[in-house]
Amino acid sequence: MSLFSRTSDQPGLHGTLRDCTPQGKGLKRLAEGDIAVIDSPDLGRREAQLLLDAKPAAVVNLAEFSTGAIPNYGPHMLLDANIPLVEAAGSELREQLRDGKKGSVTEDGEVFIGTKRAGAGTVVQREDADATFNDAQRNLVDHMEAYFGNTIEFIHSEAPLLIDGVGVPDVGDDLAGKKVLVVSPTDGHRERLDRLRNFIREYEPVIIGVSSAADTLAKMGYKPDFIVSNPEEVEADNLRSDARVILPADPDGHAPGLERIQDLGVGAMTFPSALENPTDLALLLAVFHDAQMIVTVGDRVDLDAIFAHREDATPASLLTWLKGGGRIIDSDMIESLYNVGSSRAVAWAWAILGLLVALAAIIVIVGLGGDASFTDNLIDTWNNIALTVQSWFK
Image 1: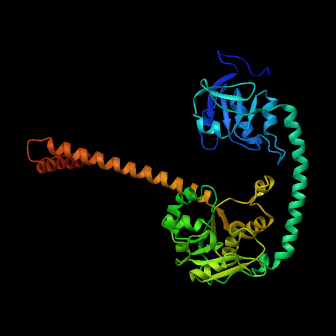
Image 2: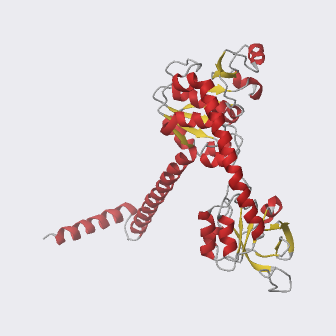
Image 3: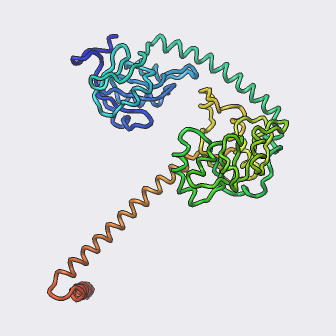
């Protein structure tokens, strides 16, 4: 490949490696001639344009530029600008990547940090990108036709639940008009929950733990008000807590794990429906009991998730999120609000502390600066200041 040239004793294209993954900050430092390392399956136009503006020497993707799930234009934009692309470089490179290190990429897709091989991927050829794009266009249409066909079937079977809340357990007014926090056992949910501690402390929301996330809540010192789960997925001590336990059940009323609840002597309610995801049940519980706001710690179901064939983005989940409408808010939005507030509060605290330290320093200097006692020196200085100020107004 002519785009890869020898610029030093080691073959390949050389430059400074920039960690442009979501965990890194290299995109802000990316400059012309650098090698950008990203982690972007199905690279879109916006991110591709940001890369193009920086004019990198090459782009290495830990994921695939196109998975075939959607017809995305990002890789074509980079290829049209004659920027070499390497994809599926994987976890080996992720573990060794350090922003700012000198590195190189060979025409075979190997990535070096210094002279050490740090990983390898596949060089993207234009004809392969075109073929993947065309296949993705056909697959997307087929997928969406099947998806919305299943959505219509689900509406037929679950219309009473979705319209009037038939089958939703009666929990009284425990949720009405209140803020509700629904925590699901997704990747990183503990860290996200930790970033919500100020929100929880300030608003004291009703907390619903879904499946094993109920155990996470208990370990972090929070007491779930509700647990929506198959009892087999939650520790016995937490099932015996003051939380009200709701068991997902089949439409015929059979609830998996009911035997465990009976063995533990715990009271529980069942939630019969065709929904398979307990998070959907937790959301509907809050929606039909008139929660004011529902904050979710979990994966949001949106159009991009459906396009990407994400496992949890089922027709049932889509309809659940649509039913909740504007009341359902992703916890990321709450986190961002509290991050801004916290930074300002810290800035004010430091400013006040600085003033107090300066004032204390002045008092010490004045008190020790005269021939009299510490107190007399302060009094004399204050009197002199007062006389000076009075003279300004005469």
